[in-house]
Length: 82
Image (cartoon, rainbow, N blue to C red; front, side):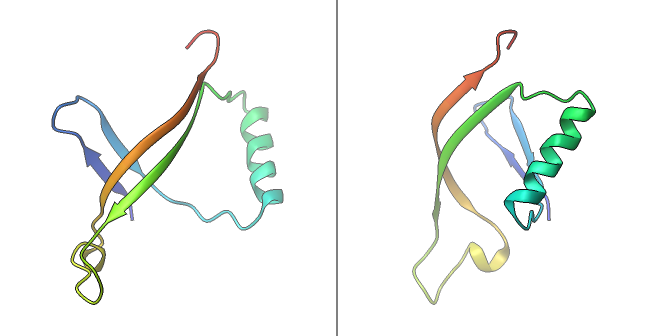
């Protein structure tokens, strides 16, 4: 399903949809297709996510398809016009 995260102190809204990409060859084909349609990488971010829940067997959030997440941003690379 799609995930919507809203930070109360920010005007940002994150909507996330996960897609299964079976292997590196498929990922490369997707990148080539996007490039052929004139899509360009405007920003690349790398981060580490930390997920929190109660200890087993009382998984409170996970069993409700809900996540308490802390995101640690590592690297942000912008292009020349970004």
